[in-house]
Amino acid sequence: MTTNMVRESAKIYEFPVRDAARLQALRERQMPKPVIYESGAASWYHEEAIREAENASKQ
Image 1 (cartoon, rainbow, N blue to C red):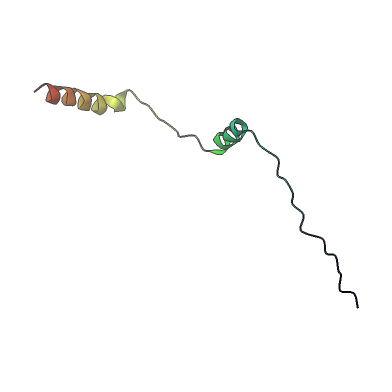
Image 2 (cartoon, helix red, strand yellow; image 1 turned 180 degrees about the horizontal axis):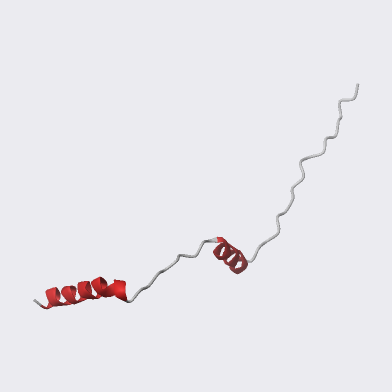
């Protein structure tokens, strides 16, 4: 009976090194972009709120 058996160890594989800027660009392409709707007629309440805030700060 042989008592001196040689076993092969686990193999270690290196993953390729990625550029941080390239990885960030890849992530940005995969993220959904927000949709912004802007309408001049619907923004009157926002402009009015700004005016009210300015008047309140002056008092």
